[in-house]
Image (cartoon, rainbow, N blue to C red; front, top):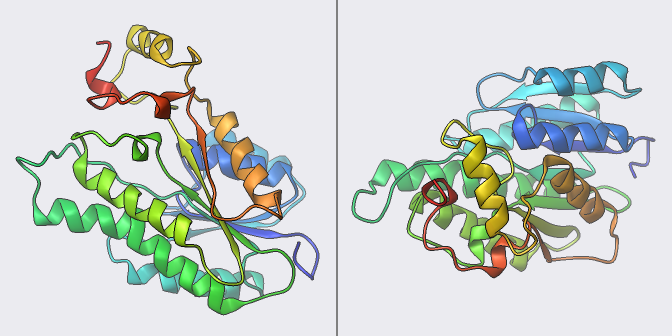
Length: 251
């Protein structure tokens, strides 16, 4: 908790999709929110409704992490807007690519690393430097594929493995943990039949849901004796060495 009252959470990628579900759960749990977006910071409709009904403060911030230095500027802008540094940092911003070793390029590698790993490292650096009273923690959003990496989306996978490494290394003075989802929200690459077939392939015969991931983030934020742990919330997907990305399976 912040010494001035309500805790403040900075959620990168917090306006859309999985990040929005995490932000909504944090709002319900009593957090004020700094929500980051890469090109705009307008919450998707379901999150906007939660924010309108919740008794809390929130503000949106824009930062394009393809230039990782903007992460440091973002942290300063959040502290200036709210008059204090965040108590919780959720590193959820991500970009994906369809590259494999045969066709990966420098721009693929540097772009994915900048957004999925380097920006998070710089945010953690600023978070640690800001100091503050009470329990302060970081939750990194990872991916179940870090347990059994496959050749698809190589630049994304390498960057998430880097972020997992940061989670294990940790940082003095704060707690840092990770949540590794499986396939959670379908994109246009999937149809409903494929999603059902993929769910049947999981050890628990289900896919992770946004509320599952959000609950895991809340648990990590509140588990004051837990540090440098990674929670896989994926229907058991991390137990299976899938040879390809899910979009190429059960089609």
